[in-house]
Image 1 (cartoon, rainbow, N blue to C red):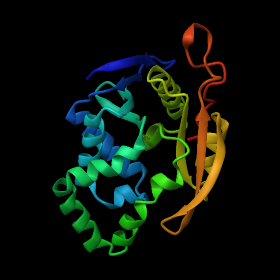
Image 2: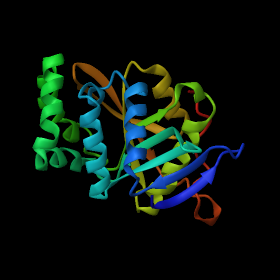
Image 3: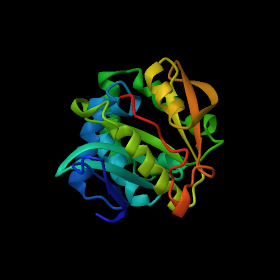
Amino acid sequence: MSRSDTGSDARGAIAYATARTPDRDLVRQAVRLHRRSLDQSFLTSLGEPFLQALYEGLLRQGSAFLVTARDGSRLVGFILASTATTRMLPLVMRSPLRFLWSVLAAIVRHPETAARLVETYSYSRKTASVSAELIAIAVQPDLRSQGIGRRLLAALDEAFVSRGVRTYKVTVHREMTDTNRFYRQNGFHLAGTFRLYGVGWNLHVRELGAVRGEGGSVGASGPREDPR
């Protein structure tokens, strides 16, 4: 694994790192945690093989990276982020056979998936005002409400700044009150709303230009305590 940033929490037990080229086992752990924590999301509905292929493909492209929180060999939390999420759809189109069987299986299980796939094409247009994105964040259920999400966000800020990114986005279902509050409390502002898959979404944006602390670190206005 190639790391651009490492650190540990106050207890010293959980190590935080940014992985540019994570090994396959780490990606597999992230995919499984994604499925457990984000079980209602559209990507999760496409199945674990699809998620595995998507994660590996995005990370190989170079625009995406993982921010991880690990307790020994156990992945306790992660963020999947990208400096340019507009590359996600071209990735699928360039390797259609790798994703085809997972998509067909998902359509058999849930026929409405076909319509959602078509609608997904409009996602980039609806959120095009900002290119860099926090795609997914997840923390092990038994370790939530311990600030791991907050520290993952702090590490993500550092990773984006090191890549020349000053603004990034995250999209959240409008009715997910606690999650929307978490992002507001951690320096994001509501930049817009849109509809996708028949539900309302909020587009939250975080500006990093004003959160650089002394010594070049992100911190003065950095993330607040993770409510999860």
